[in-house]
Length: 472
Image 1 (cartoon, rainbow, N blue to C red):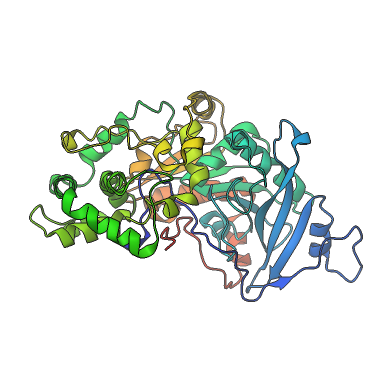
Image 2: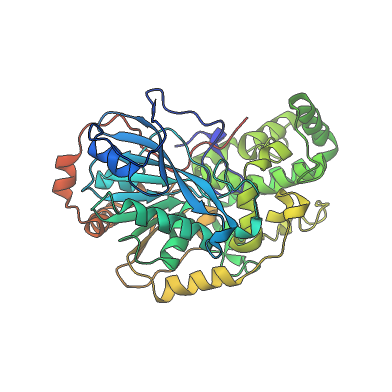
């Protein structure tokens, strides 16, 4: 079970914690790419350097693998390549050029530390991890935010797959969790021939943004009645004590140099957003057993403030906390959608109608109208035309309330009992776990026996694709 300091607010999908780029301790810088490859170089390095537009930035060698940080030249606008290029960062966890390749994106930035996703481990394969466009440093110098859409990112990944298929001969599987799962679905929709199957974890499908009854229904039934009541009460009490709790947030922000002017506007608005987010964040990463820790209605101001901070993080809803995630919120506002909850139990206590939306978390100049057509298109394609797609959801995960519905064309949907936003194949009921694993290996052309025989000891840690969010 994850610690409760790893929680992600509801308007923020699961993501990769980022910061200054730090290469692995054993990383070795690779000289700049040249037009000729010497015979002294090893075949893999020579093959990578021979890919047009691909630069090998560094290499390290964890046990059982070689790990590369790479940079790939991409058009700023795939519809108009004359607009110039930018460098998109990716990493390569290499085992064998004949082994399957898992294409992974978090939908956010890229961690520069090697790790294996669940499909990579189950297939004992290679892994290509891609940083989503507009997450620094994978952002054009003169950023045209209109080029940040699902088709442009899918086209980025399409070019990467085409480029690396000149190096790798095995089958390709795409994966990602939460926003990364959504990104994998969009890539499959626009370029269905790129990979041989998709495993999308806890991927929301907000096909009609205002029609979010599924989310309200989720909060009306998740857990037991006592826990649901406790979560409502802590919100009510926090808002009733606003005049005492907001000054604490203001003092905390002042002590740490945090501001509110670029995004939410004021500490009071930031406080209200955090309170609104708390039950969602609770169920996103906590378990039913954690209901015992929810403060009672009679709890002290200190207890309520500290619980809210632990679960939803007051630091997150500051300008500094929001800045890194601006590309996500922009995408949510323009295409992806966001949860529109009713908050009926808080009527009379809220000061800012419409606050709980993606546009609240980005600078005013980037706020825009939502276009419902891309999500309707993707939803229709997944329901009617898709094939070889696997969706994994968590029973107690709010993001799993609005799900994709796959076809019967070798496609599947599984729900992990009692699981939160960290749902995975390992957490499925045994029969489902075996079925999902068998399907994945069949798509990848890897038998279970072969996978086990080849699974040499490795020093690369497993990646649950949902790392801790707190950047401060």
